[in-house]
Length: 166
Image (cartoon, rainbow, N blue to C red; front, side, top):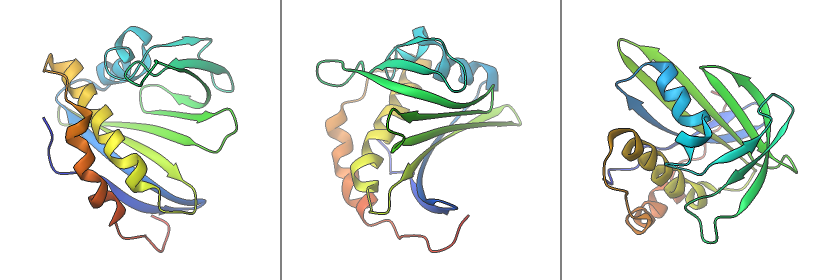
């Protein structure tokens, strides 16, 4: 299922962000359910538990990672069905899921806010993999192998650093 990498770096008001996306021929509410309902997130990323509300902490189980660790995540913003912002306990990792719908297609953009260093090589291949896992879970396709995504590291490490906010 691997394809050319889709990610890009953009400047933001607080640094830069890596954006990786996928498009689905589906209603926005259905794609939103795939990225927010525990039973559906378990199929591609991992399940979660807790009181899902802005400002609250939830526990996310990384179902595909070694030993399936549970991680604490804070829901910073939840605006169904268009925007979900999560950060880790210390606040030094922030992820946004942005959804939009036009002409029967729902676009999902995963925005990973980065620190000042170029971390896109460390994160880009993994996000490509997880988003392809989402596609596979929605379309009943075979599960991709993470090893197939490691070759994307050089693409992500070579992404040009943006100079102005998008």
